[in-house]
Amino acid sequence: MSGVRTVVTGLGVVAPGGLGTEEYWKALLSGENGITRLSRFDTSGYPATLAGEIRGFDAAEHLPSRLLPQTDVSTRYALVAADWALADAGVGPETALADYDMGVVTSTAQGGFDFTHREFRKLWHQGPAYVSVYESFAWFYAVNTGQISIRNGMRGPSAALLGEQAGGLDAVGHARRTVRRGTPLVLSGGVDSAFDPWGWSAQLAGGRVTTRDDPERAYLPFDREAAGHVPGEGGAMFVVEDLAVARRRGAERIHGEIAGYAATFDPRPGSGRPPGLRRAIDLALADAGLTPSDVGVVFADAAALPALDRAEARALREVFGERGVPVTAPKTLTGRMYAGGGPADVAAALLSLRDQVAPATAHTADVPREYGLDLVLGEPRALDTGAALVLARGRHGFNAAVVLTAL
Image (cartoon, rainbow, N blue to C red; front, side):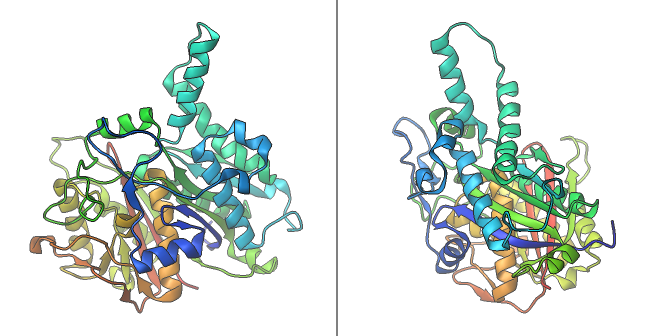
């Protein structure tokens, strides 16, 4: 396993403000705010009304009509992002890989809300029946991965992971593990969407969504006025390959290497033990064979709740030192996309390494001095680095870290 280098050869992004990888990147660098009042349904009776909503996406333009009745919003986004990633990697029917040489590993944390809601409504009209929410969600996760697998003829080792915001990075880490175990190519990433009334209510019930109604002042990670996040939808998909296989088949481009990955879990509340985020960072760096000084930019989880922001700032300060590395959270322009957020940050990090520039953390302005963060504010910042770190934390203690390097 240690001799296999795992690289990203294809990117596909579907996100607020940017349909397509380059459109997404352009929106981040220009500071285009994808956070607006949610239009998917009437939110006038809800305490929160803002969302990072994807506009202008017509599934019928991208997918066969036969797939539309079988899929919900989240799966449609994932299928299209997968198509774009495969096209970017130059992978198609002519690629000299057998169907069992290609797998699919994806993550979604709440994309099943719309699907499950529709299924329950069918049951309501069709007569007495019982399907638990857990069973329906579990089936949806399998379908989400399965639809991608079937559509692209990928019969190799596959999986669907669930870890809320951290789940998207876990999918990338598991894809890397799958490639290192002998599967030449894995389509991986995460996409989420839960902008139906049921899904929206569930997000608000978690207590982490801001109730502010100004898109410019709602989502303020690491700011003194931080008061919760804005939900977003979308994410990214990647073609992850064995470097030797990619070169042998003549891959047009290699966006970067997945050099390190680690996942940890926080101790139980009240245990007195520290959160697991720093350990995830240390383990991911060790896995990559790098030191903190090798990392030139960090894409933060950016929960935008004071206690969680302090904990993340402390972990970064302990690893990199006071203001020791540029830190950014471009998700302030898209909202937190849950399982899609980590992959979207991975895409942005790879593009940062390509162009040697870090997008800014929009809207945040007043960072407490005690955080000790060198947060990229105001405008993008030039970089001179070959390595980036991407972090994500999920509810109930999930932590994930991915180290990316340029080739």
